[in-house]
Length: 379
Image (tube, rainbow, N blue to C red; front, side, top):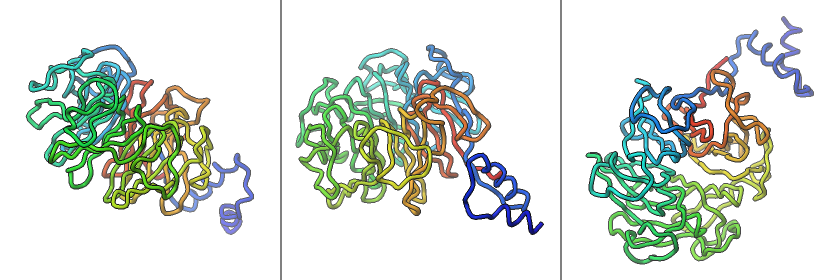
């Protein structure tokens, strides 16, 4: 027993193939090891246009992007391939379409959302009253569905371009907006206007819009620099917490925090160059490749859909390090691994990401046409 204990806790001059042995020895001593696992919660893997309702593992969800848990506890998923938004009941394992007719277009305002034509819904958010907001990238606008199921346009004319700051958001022009986020007061709706290399802000009380970051140029922001009227490169994904807007830059391959009170940037993670390291690394030395989703958990840890690396990454804010929690990296895109350790699974260009109250991480596994759950358990 003494020999076993000495072997298990020897200083880490351990070659990689010995790691499973070390873990086994730890388990023999009764010490639980927590690990990330993965499973599919929605989507059959088909990209065809199918029914509007059915068992969540049977329905076709073509290119799921945004994922978000609504105030009713259901998981909402934007389907880019067939221009719809789904609601997934995780306990009943049932899915149904709540917006979009399946036809590409821009029509239906003032009527039922399920009869409306959408054009590539990318991301979805909710307020506490149950109003659902989503961004349509190819319609260059943001729409909302009220709790009664009626759809309307909140911002954008439907024509690509840039303009409208200082005026009504409904008359503003965007260019391929990708992400949205509501602040805790639910007054401000932030928009990642990626084609214009800006972040815009809609005042939901007055209906007016302005830009809070970016000047249209394709340059990385500078740490500590004011955001208004200064560059930001490819703001792709947004998430808000009190006083902060967390931003993943697609072309900038990095993660930033925008202090909303001061209007200044803080460089958090990523060296700005496309790349990948599977193991834990210091935050600013880490490499991403086209991150397209960002979310925080209750402890303040940050989860990133590292799309072109076919991986999900986690920034541990207490340790100030970053690690991969799911996926095998840029050469291992594909599908596999359900029911097993998430680091041995294969993903295929994941996009949207969210975190549930139990700490489960949900991700749109886009080219696998599935939504997957990454969760911790002891082994």
